[in-house]
Length: 438
Image (cartoon, rainbow, N blue to C red; front, side, top):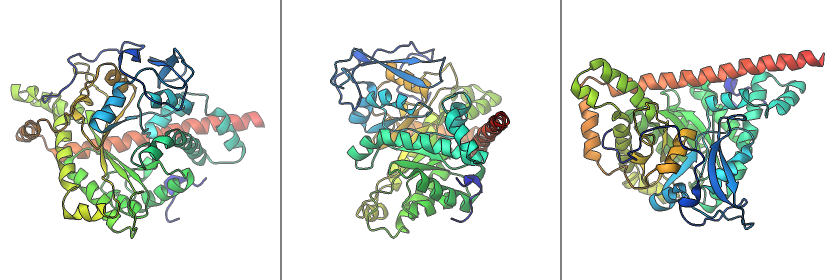
């Protein structure tokens, strides 16, 4: 497989549980959470546990099988989607991919991945060893082998979520795979990588993840215009989010397609990392007013992002696209795990619930929300307070553009580090395999 990185042309008043973040009490028994839901898999009452001996991912165990393939109880994830129109996704992926089946039965409707997730999955598991050995033996270079490992996981996961994709007429059930982080500042390289991944994965419900860097915003427009669905990632500020929306709209308009219904997108707006950085700035300022704003920046900015979303996806320009079947580029809340143990463990989920949105949750956030999350429309319940917090932070000297630029740079660098680290590990493993074959 070609080396993809080298391709050129071919608390703001947040409605949340009063319970503070703590180690989740596992297992969580879903028998107390509601009524029946159809499932394509076997049987059961569900409980969550973490299998520390095998992998870091969330594991949902099945019990009390009735033989009909119908879980006996619903979960808060079903309520989240059916009552509030928000799709819960899982921010993790590793082998065996079939471990996603109980999560799908519990209400998970999509999956996101990134270079860090794959670095952890591949480096900490022997599940990839046999395929990697075959690839190396066949003469594949290390980066090409890496992408083949990734593509297999993405294809297998897409197959599991395909029923949801079909049932929703392409509105949900997506699995995301990110272009090489080495391309974050390469407009044309990103376009070619997106085209290649779209072709090689060859699944209708795959999202190609493209970072929202200044260099890649034009890539988003071009990839959308080609009819390829995109998950735009690493969005940390309102101005950049607006540029991402415009790139999506421009791409739809320039596509030349008469039917736009199969081209979809999500815009991944990162949340908790904003508080991590802004809180440090507020502590450096040190005044009572500054300290009182800790833990409020991220949700306030996200609330205003939803307001912008509502504005941009309305009016004559959008209505003209709707006539051709266009679907809104949904806001996706990313980075939803709580970093500060003093904050409620559902701080970045409970206050951001609203229609036509996605919340992608890693293990910690998913466990917390399924255990004691509150299902209620909260995203636009107090926009004036969010505006007040946003302005108050500006008056204290917090430059939102600088915050966004720093977090974007850190995010890109973090993914590059994970990507490069894994390639080094794979090279060492490949060298060992070659030595053994001599």
